[in-house]
Length: 294
Image 1: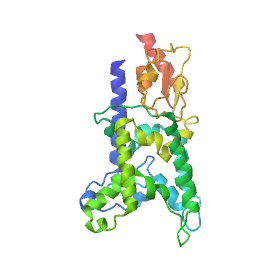
Image 2: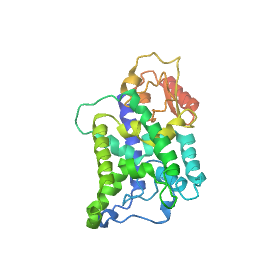
Image 3: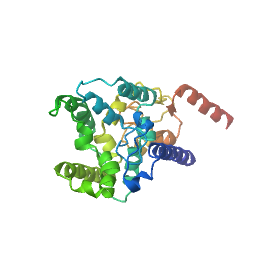
Image 4: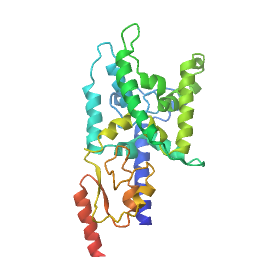
Protein backbone atom coordinates (compact mmCIF):
# COMPACT_ATOMS: atom_id res chain seq x y z
CA UNK A 1 0.00 0.00 0.00
CA UNK A 2 2.84 2.39 0.86
CA UNK A 3 4.54 1.67 -2.48
CA UNK A 4 1.28 2.25 -4.36
CA UNK A 5 0.75 5.54 -2.55
CA UNK A 6 4.27 6.73 -3.44
CA UNK A 7 3.85 5.69 -7.09
CA UNK A 8 0.54 7.57 -7.38
CA UNK A 9 1.99 10.72 -5.81
CA UNK A 10 5.11 10.62 -8.01
CA UNK A 11 3.06 10.01 -11.16
CA UNK A 12 0.75 12.96 -10.45
CA UNK A 13 3.62 15.27 -9.54
CA UNK A 14 5.49 14.34 -12.71
CA UNK A 15 2.45 15.10 -14.88
CA UNK A 16 1.95 18.39 -13.02
CA UNK A 17 5.53 19.46 -13.78
CA UNK A 18 5.20 18.43 -17.43
CA UNK A 19 1.96 20.43 -17.72
CA UNK A 20 3.62 23.41 -16.02
CA UNK A 21 6.60 23.23 -18.37
CA UNK A 22 4.39 22.94 -21.45
CA UNK A 23 2.34 25.94 -20.28
CA UNK A 24 5.44 28.06 -19.55
CA UNK A 25 8.26 27.15 -21.98
CA UNK A 26 9.52 30.67 -22.73
CA UNK A 27 11.63 31.16 -19.61
CA UNK A 28 14.07 33.44 -21.45
CA UNK A 29 11.31 36.07 -21.66
CA UNK A 30 11.65 36.73 -17.93
CA UNK A 31 15.00 38.42 -18.48
CA UNK A 32 13.64 41.07 -20.82
CA UNK A 33 10.11 41.10 -19.44
CA UNK A 34 8.61 40.21 -22.82
CA UNK A 35 5.33 38.37 -23.36
CA UNK A 36 5.01 35.62 -25.91
CA UNK A 37 2.36 36.61 -28.50
CA UNK A 38 2.79 33.85 -31.06
CA UNK A 39 0.18 31.58 -32.63
CA UNK A 40 -0.17 29.38 -29.54
CA UNK A 41 -1.64 32.30 -27.56
CA UNK A 42 -4.90 31.86 -29.46
CA UNK A 43 -5.39 28.56 -27.63
CA UNK A 44 -6.51 28.31 -24.00
CA UNK A 45 -4.75 26.48 -21.20
CA UNK A 46 -7.03 23.93 -19.48
CA UNK A 47 -5.82 25.25 -16.11
CA UNK A 48 -5.22 28.70 -14.66
CA UNK A 49 -2.09 30.33 -16.04
CA UNK A 50 -1.83 34.08 -16.65
CA UNK A 51 -1.70 35.34 -20.25
CA UNK A 52 0.72 38.07 -19.12
CA UNK A 53 3.23 35.64 -17.64
CA UNK A 54 6.39 36.16 -19.75
CA UNK A 55 6.90 32.39 -20.06
CA UNK A 56 3.28 31.50 -20.90
CA UNK A 57 2.57 29.87 -24.26
CA UNK A 58 -1.22 29.69 -23.94
CA UNK A 59 -4.05 32.04 -22.99
CA UNK A 60 -5.94 31.89 -19.70
CA UNK A 61 -9.49 30.50 -20.25
CA UNK A 62 -11.01 32.86 -17.67
CA UNK A 63 -9.29 35.87 -19.23
CA UNK A 64 -10.35 34.81 -22.73
CA UNK A 65 -13.94 34.28 -21.58
CA UNK A 66 -14.08 37.78 -20.08
CA UNK A 67 -12.41 39.41 -23.07
CA UNK A 68 -15.12 38.17 -25.40
CA UNK A 69 -18.14 38.70 -23.14
CA UNK A 70 -16.87 42.16 -22.25
CA UNK A 71 -16.44 43.29 -25.87
CA UNK A 72 -18.60 46.07 -27.33
CA UNK A 73 -20.85 43.48 -29.00
CA UNK A 74 -21.09 41.29 -25.87
CA UNK A 75 -20.41 38.21 -27.95
CA UNK A 76 -20.71 34.74 -26.51
CA UNK A 77 -17.49 32.80 -26.87
CA UNK A 78 -18.53 29.39 -28.12
CA UNK A 79 -14.85 28.47 -28.51
CA UNK A 80 -13.85 29.20 -24.89
CA UNK A 81 -17.04 27.85 -23.33
CA UNK A 82 -16.91 24.81 -25.60
CA UNK A 83 -13.31 24.17 -24.61
CA UNK A 84 -14.12 24.45 -20.90
CA UNK A 85 -17.05 22.08 -21.30
CA UNK A 86 -14.89 19.64 -23.27
CA UNK A 87 -12.19 19.55 -20.58
CA UNK A 88 -14.85 19.42 -17.87
CA UNK A 89 -16.85 16.59 -19.39
CA UNK A 90 -13.76 14.51 -20.08
CA UNK A 91 -11.72 15.21 -16.92
CA UNK A 92 -13.82 17.22 -14.45
CA UNK A 93 -11.67 18.63 -11.65
CA UNK A 94 -8.89 16.24 -12.53
CA UNK A 95 -7.74 19.27 -14.56
CA UNK A 96 -7.17 21.06 -11.24
CA UNK A 97 -5.34 18.13 -9.69
CA UNK A 98 -3.14 17.13 -12.61
CA UNK A 99 -2.86 19.91 -15.23
CA UNK A 100 -3.30 23.32 -13.58
CA UNK A 101 -0.03 25.33 -13.34
CA UNK A 102 -1.28 27.50 -10.49
CA UNK A 103 -2.47 24.37 -8.71
CA UNK A 104 1.12 23.12 -8.66
CA UNK A 105 2.31 26.50 -7.34
CA UNK A 106 -0.22 26.28 -4.50
CA UNK A 107 0.95 22.81 -3.52
CA UNK A 108 4.58 23.95 -3.44
CA UNK A 109 3.63 26.95 -1.27
CA UNK A 110 1.76 24.63 1.12
CA UNK A 111 5.01 22.75 1.77
CA UNK A 112 6.36 25.80 3.65
CA UNK A 113 6.56 24.69 7.31
CA UNK A 114 3.66 26.08 9.36
CA UNK A 115 0.60 24.94 11.29
CA UNK A 116 -1.88 23.42 8.83
CA UNK A 117 -5.57 24.28 9.08
CA UNK A 118 -8.83 22.96 7.70
CA UNK A 119 -10.93 25.26 5.54
CA UNK A 120 -14.29 26.26 6.99
CA UNK A 121 -17.09 25.09 4.72
CA UNK A 122 -18.43 28.60 4.10
CA UNK A 123 -15.29 29.54 2.17
CA UNK A 124 -16.06 26.86 -0.44
CA UNK A 125 -18.89 28.99 -1.83
CA UNK A 126 -16.59 31.94 -2.47
CA UNK A 127 -15.48 30.64 -5.88
CA UNK A 128 -19.09 30.41 -7.08
CA UNK A 129 -19.74 34.01 -6.04
CA UNK A 130 -16.61 35.14 -7.90
CA UNK A 131 -17.58 33.13 -10.99
CA UNK A 132 -21.07 34.66 -11.16
CA UNK A 133 -20.18 38.24 -10.21
CA UNK A 134 -16.62 38.88 -11.42
CA UNK A 135 -16.40 36.52 -14.41
CA UNK A 136 -19.93 36.59 -15.83
CA UNK A 137 -21.86 39.67 -14.68
CA UNK A 138 -19.36 42.53 -14.28
CA UNK A 139 -17.73 42.19 -17.73
CA UNK A 140 -21.22 42.65 -19.20
CA UNK A 141 -22.70 45.21 -16.79
CA UNK A 142 -19.72 47.42 -15.85
CA UNK A 143 -18.61 49.14 -19.07
CA UNK A 144 -16.24 52.02 -19.82
CA UNK A 145 -16.88 55.09 -21.96
CA UNK A 146 -16.44 52.98 -25.11
CA UNK A 147 -19.04 50.50 -23.94
CA UNK A 148 -16.49 47.77 -23.30
CA UNK A 149 -16.76 45.64 -20.19
CA UNK A 150 -13.98 45.16 -17.67
CA UNK A 151 -12.26 41.78 -17.28
CA UNK A 152 -13.15 42.09 -13.60
CA UNK A 153 -11.59 38.89 -12.26
CA UNK A 154 -8.28 39.44 -14.04
CA UNK A 155 -8.20 43.14 -13.26
CA UNK A 156 -9.27 43.17 -9.62
CA UNK A 157 -8.67 39.71 -8.13
CA UNK A 158 -6.53 37.12 -9.91
CA UNK A 159 -3.43 36.48 -7.74
CA UNK A 160 -2.00 34.21 -10.46
CA UNK A 161 -1.79 37.21 -12.79
CA UNK A 162 -0.14 39.32 -10.11
CA UNK A 163 2.41 36.64 -9.26
CA UNK A 164 3.17 35.32 -12.74
CA UNK A 165 2.78 38.53 -14.71
CA UNK A 166 2.60 41.75 -12.68
CA UNK A 167 5.49 41.19 -10.28
CA UNK A 168 7.94 40.08 -12.98
CA UNK A 169 6.95 42.78 -15.46
CA UNK A 170 7.37 45.48 -12.82
CA UNK A 171 10.77 44.04 -11.96
CA UNK A 172 12.00 44.27 -15.54
CA UNK A 173 10.26 47.50 -16.61
CA UNK A 174 11.16 50.44 -14.31
CA UNK A 175 8.81 52.72 -16.26
CA UNK A 176 5.84 50.63 -15.17
CA UNK A 177 6.61 51.20 -11.49
CA UNK A 178 5.60 54.83 -11.86
CA UNK A 179 2.07 53.72 -12.77
CA UNK A 180 1.55 51.68 -9.60
CA UNK A 181 -1.61 52.79 -7.88
CA UNK A 182 -4.34 51.59 -5.58
CA UNK A 183 -5.42 48.84 -7.98
CA UNK A 184 -2.04 47.10 -7.94
CA UNK A 185 -1.88 47.56 -4.16
CA UNK A 186 -5.25 45.80 -3.91
CA UNK A 187 -4.08 42.92 -6.10
CA UNK A 188 -0.80 42.64 -4.22
CA UNK A 189 -2.77 42.44 -0.97
CA UNK A 190 -4.95 39.67 -2.45
CA UNK A 191 -1.79 37.84 -3.56
CA UNK A 192 -0.28 38.06 -0.06
CA UNK A 193 -3.53 36.81 1.51
CA UNK A 194 -3.62 33.98 -1.04
CA UNK A 195 -0.03 32.95 -0.31
CA UNK A 196 -0.66 32.97 3.44
CA UNK A 197 -3.89 31.04 2.87
CA UNK A 198 -2.07 28.44 0.74
CA UNK A 199 0.63 28.03 3.39
CA UNK A 200 -1.97 27.28 6.05
CA UNK A 201 -4.67 25.54 3.98
CA UNK A 202 -4.09 23.05 1.18
CA UNK A 203 -4.97 24.69 -2.18
CA UNK A 204 -6.68 27.65 -0.52
CA UNK A 205 -7.13 29.59 -3.78
CA UNK A 206 -8.35 26.51 -5.65
CA UNK A 207 -11.02 25.80 -3.04
CA UNK A 208 -12.16 29.28 -2.02
CA UNK A 209 -11.51 31.67 -4.92
CA UNK A 210 -10.84 30.02 -8.29
CA UNK A 211 -13.77 30.40 -10.74
CA UNK A 212 -12.21 27.79 -13.03
CA UNK A 213 -12.39 25.27 -10.19
CA UNK A 214 -16.05 26.17 -9.77
CA UNK A 215 -16.73 25.45 -13.45
CA UNK A 216 -14.95 22.10 -13.44
CA UNK A 217 -16.52 21.22 -10.08
CA UNK A 218 -19.99 21.40 -11.65
CA UNK A 219 -18.90 18.70 -14.10
CA UNK A 220 -17.43 16.18 -11.66
CA UNK A 221 -20.72 14.29 -11.56
CA UNK A 222 -20.81 13.80 -15.33
CA UNK A 223 -17.12 13.67 -16.21
CA UNK A 224 -15.79 10.63 -18.07
CA UNK A 225 -12.82 10.48 -15.70
CA UNK A 226 -14.54 9.66 -12.44
CA UNK A 227 -14.20 8.01 -9.07
CA UNK A 228 -16.25 5.06 -7.85
CA UNK A 229 -16.53 3.28 -4.52
CA UNK A 230 -17.48 -0.38 -4.26
CA UNK A 231 -19.74 -0.36 -1.21
CA UNK A 232 -19.57 -4.17 -0.93
CA UNK A 233 -15.78 -4.11 -0.61
CA UNK A 234 -15.64 -0.98 1.56
CA UNK A 235 -15.23 -1.62 5.31
CA UNK A 236 -15.76 2.03 6.33
CA UNK A 237 -12.32 2.30 7.92
CA UNK A 238 -12.19 6.02 7.14
CA UNK A 239 -8.63 5.97 5.77
CA UNK A 240 -9.68 7.52 2.45
CA UNK A 241 -11.31 10.48 4.21
CA UNK A 242 -8.30 10.89 6.48
CA UNK A 243 -5.77 11.22 3.62
CA UNK A 244 -7.90 13.54 1.48
CA UNK A 245 -6.34 17.01 1.62
CA UNK A 246 -9.40 18.49 -0.08
CA UNK A 247 -11.44 17.31 2.95
CA UNK A 248 -13.77 15.09 0.93
CA UNK A 249 -15.28 11.81 2.10
CA UNK A 250 -15.00 9.63 -1.04
CA UNK A 251 -17.37 7.00 0.36
CA UNK A 252 -20.21 9.48 0.87
CA UNK A 253 -19.44 11.85 -2.03
CA UNK A 254 -17.23 10.24 -4.71
CA UNK A 255 -18.45 12.86 -7.21
CA UNK A 256 -17.94 15.84 -4.89
CA UNK A 257 -17.27 19.16 -6.63
CA UNK A 258 -14.22 19.56 -4.38
CA UNK A 259 -12.53 16.31 -5.46
CA UNK A 260 -9.52 16.96 -7.73
CA UNK A 261 -9.00 13.24 -8.48
CA UNK A 262 -5.52 13.21 -6.96
CA UNK A 263 -5.76 9.48 -6.23
CA UNK A 264 -4.69 9.65 -2.58
CA UNK A 265 -7.87 7.88 -1.46
CA UNK A 266 -7.38 5.12 -4.03
CA UNK A 267 -3.84 4.45 -2.78
CA UNK A 268 -4.92 4.53 0.88
CA UNK A 269 -7.81 2.06 0.60
CA UNK A 270 -6.77 -1.27 2.21
CA UNK A 271 -9.50 -3.19 0.35
CA UNK A 272 -9.04 -1.70 -3.16
CA UNK A 273 -12.65 -0.57 -2.97
CA UNK A 274 -12.04 2.79 -4.66
CA UNK A 275 -11.51 3.03 -8.39
CA UNK A 276 -10.52 6.06 -10.46
CA UNK A 277 -10.27 6.34 -14.22
CA UNK A 278 -12.14 6.61 -17.51
CA UNK A 279 -13.66 3.16 -17.16
CA UNK A 280 -13.82 2.10 -13.53
CA UNK A 281 -15.34 -1.26 -14.42
CA UNK A 282 -12.23 -2.29 -16.37
CA UNK A 283 -9.98 -0.96 -13.61
CA UNK A 284 -11.88 -3.04 -11.08
CA UNK A 285 -11.63 -6.21 -13.17
CA UNK A 286 -7.87 -5.75 -13.55
CA UNK A 287 -7.48 -5.40 -9.78
CA UNK A 288 -9.58 -8.50 -9.22
CA UNK A 289 -7.39 -10.49 -11.61
CA UNK A 290 -4.28 -9.33 -9.72
CA UNK A 291 -5.86 -10.54 -6.47
CA UNK A 292 -6.58 -13.94 -8.04
CA UNK A 293 -2.95 -14.20 -9.24
CA UNK A 294 -1.54 -13.46 -5.79
